[in-house]
Length: 387
Image (cartoon, rainbow, N blue to C red; front, side, top):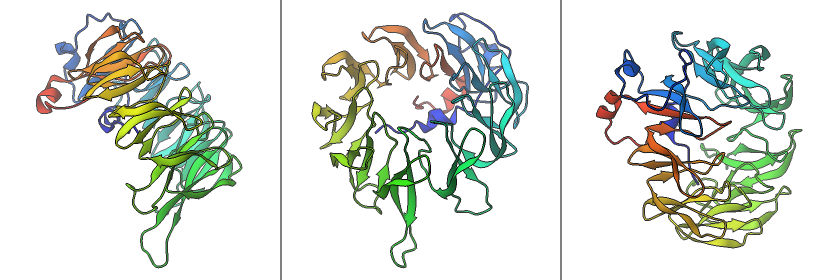
């Protein structure tokens, strides 16, 4: 299963100068761009034609969500440079945050003086800063970790008024409700053992444990099914993956080395060292033959063969020949691909509609995509960085 790119996440705290509309003729090696720069990257935003509609001027970038993006306003020194811009680059919520999340269900998590709360789209605090950590809102609830002064903190859930509707007594890795359920885990010690193992199950929105914690790992539900790991609680590399329904029944037997969530009716699974795809009945509809695989989106999924990435359709037919160094799932009709450490975007026929000229790039959200350029100094120092 694809893991988060830590390098990409490291370069993504957030951004902004004066909003400027520019053409793609602006070059990343422009001396003015790097004048006085102390950070390794500058970020901007492109539209679906590849035009830089917001000049690369930001220290990092966040994705647009509900019309706004969280940025660190230039000219405002940390730690309180966090602000929000609209899709024209205008600051609509003034700089005042240490850190900020994208908006979700009308609210955004923000951090001030090392405590988290939530603001609305006008920038007013809907829920005061008070929590040690928080998640975004999903299905009306957000996971929060109160700062109770202890090392072994527990997680609970609040509603949009800030009311604690599920008392902090669980631990949650994914901190997200989907299909009315959320995976949680409890720590369990055998006898006098000093090491606790994690037992994963699912709660409903009342906090009731509706699927008992009998799994060594559990992921959020998607399309009515959730992947779980069955086997050793102590060895994180042991165990096999299968899928349960919302009653907790193992409807797809656990005999896979790894598995992804369902997307577009199919899930990537790993068997005998190769990746294929199953449908929601557990039938292997695309036989395991790929060294790596991503999720289906817009009817296509990225797959890797012999070290190169291409795309297959739902019948397992290769429709975009493997020729890329990396490839992401499609988003809003375009997919990020990488060639020789530069990112561009293809359409569903494999045509390169935005040339690979960016050092870093995200995925399209609400018609815009964050793209980044690494400083010449960073490239000289780290010749073998990967995006």
